Amino acid sequence: MTNDIRHFINLPDVGADALKGIIKHAHALKAEKFSPPQIMEGLSLAMVFDKRSTRTRMSFELAMKQLGGHTLVMSMDDMQITGAESLQDTGAVLSRYVDGLMIRMSDHAQLEELSRNTTIPVISGMTNDSHPCQIMADILTIEENLGDIRGKKVAWFGDYNNVVKTFEQAAPLFDFELVISTPEDLYDKSIPPQEAAKDADVIVTDTWISMGEEGKTIDKFMPYQVNADLMAHAKDSAIFMHCMPIHKDEEVTPDVLNSNACVIYDEAENRLHASKAILAWSMENTGVRLL
Image 1 (cartoon, rainbow, N blue to C red):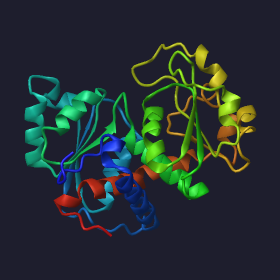
Image 2 (cartoon, one colour):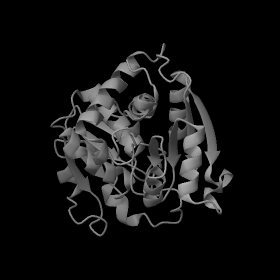
Image 3 (tube, rainbow, N blue to C red):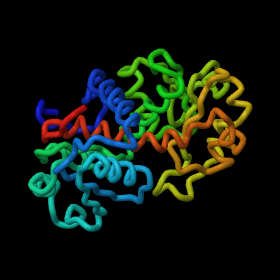
């Protein structure tokens, strides 16, 4: 990543100091959510999706508009990128039209290749390997409920997917403990569920069946279900998180979802405020007036 183009794709490339600054800015922007500063005035963001989306689309579209900017939303099928046009040409053309690009596409390597061919910031809305904006919203949520994330124990249960892989990137950057409990054929450092949950500050899981995986067998994930018995091993102050959508009675039971520990709607809202701060950091060199 060059000094003047700030892509938000891989958390380690952004760096610990910048990430912590983004979280700090997200807290400040959330405090001003009813009168957001118009720091994106005159700027435009292209948003491109290869899969349907609720939280990613709404959070980035509203973030840009609430901060005074403009958005253009397209699916991959609307663009020549799925046809004859190269990633190089697509990146060059987008760079001439808009000030930033948020793209959600399956292939992580292709997203990185696209970013190397733009002169504008590229933000990863999600790939099959990574979900950096979700993790930033999760850290914002943890800090709101439990204070500084440093030293906290975060316990992950279920599938070994793009979300937990990004938690793995975040743990050393934010200095928190991450333990993973998942089938050993997916992750060879997995620990038993009750051991993972013991004294945890945060219990987190995700759907066992992502888009494109319909028909996947879930039986092997049942021992990693988040339920009241599992939550009982965590700290009394522990919170439960899930980035949604949720399949009740699969990865999590209704009693956990209905408990005071559940902060999934805070987490969903925080996608908006984290997106604002990510946009502000990524687009600072395009003329954003930071707080």
